[in-house]
Length: 130
Image 1 (cartoon, rainbow, N blue to C red):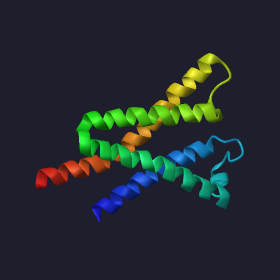
Image 2 (spheres, rainbow, N blue to C red):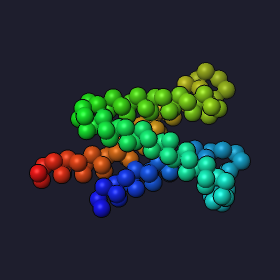
Image 3 (cartoon, rainbow, N blue to C red):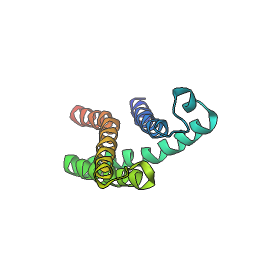
Image 4 (cartoon, rainbow, N blue to C red):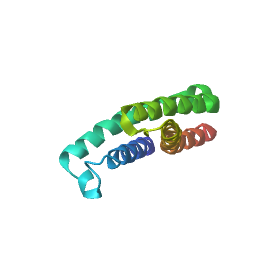
């Protein structure tokens, strides 16, 4: 039961990240715009693609402990942040483009850490009990 809830937590965090990405779109714009069926479907699909790196970060922790975890979080957040900027979330000048990259990498890293820390904590507790 606990593992199911932890996976659900990770997907919910991934969904919030995807909803945030859809929320900055000018066509969506409002909370009501996020509740339309096409945007909900798109948000759920994007959340699944964000959910995959979350599971891979947890797997990296399981195999390499903290070093593997932080390496995978850094790598995935860089790749996802750069992809977001290249898809059009960047600025118009070099400085705003660089700020967009740094901000996107930081936000994706934060989402990955928030989504995976409960799973890591649960695995550490189960190891110490056994």
